[in-house]
Image (cartoon, rainbow, N blue to C red; front, side, top):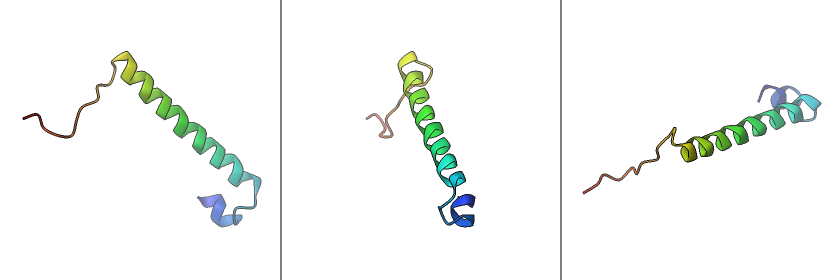
Length: 50
């Protein structure tokens, strides 16, 4: 966000940090899916059982 404001989105830092941000988000998403498959995390419903 800092480089988007400072460089008005025209600098190389903006592209680099947005790429890193997307890669980290994608990696965390994959890690959550793996954790669900391995049983490290358990999904639950937000609706109570009746």
